[in-house]
Image 1 (cartoon, rainbow, N blue to C red):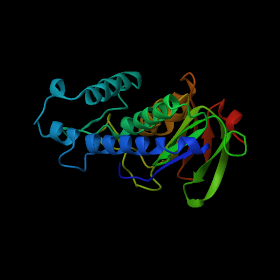
Image 2: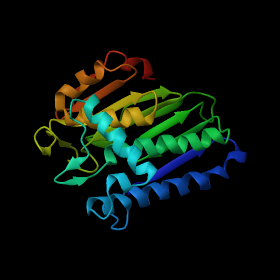
Image 3: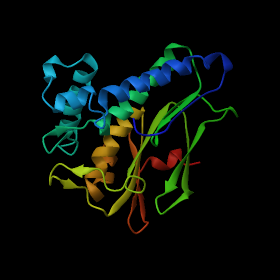
Image 4: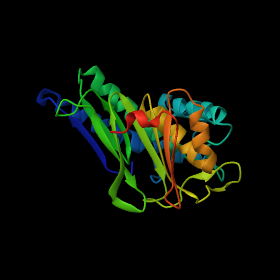
Length: 238
């Protein structure tokens, strides 16, 4: 998936399941990477296969992407310059599917992180909620907020590592550069990831969009270093 992936489980008998989890992420990378010429999404973009002839997982992602586009008033759109790139949704979806693999194996306490998007369940090694840091986008070794969470997903969209890479479908240009970081806490990483992408594309209005969404909270940092959070975000702050 072009990014580091970390999976932590607490009990030794669960370690064997990690091979299955990482094999799943390899499968996702081979299917959805727009950087691989032989991936299914690349073949779809070249017209070698049609959406109707795509695999079940691909059709699921296309359907969920269209649903998210409608939910966000068009601010989430995987179409760009005639190509499809579902990265803004598929990463969170894949992490959630990996979490389900651990759930089915009976793993009660785990942490999954891929490219800054995180799903946690249960408790950490100290028997406490998982503690997740939000980076200072201007000083990456500095943490501006520490969250205490369990059974939730956290996604962050921003420009501080990959530069400007999220575009505004309304203008067909990259999202405005006045927002540098937007973190979203949701009931799972799929929900947090897709809405973080859409809200970031909205610019300053994204945090107000999140305020209106049930079960979502957000924390936004603008280019001046000023933070704005939704009304319920504080309950997660350690």
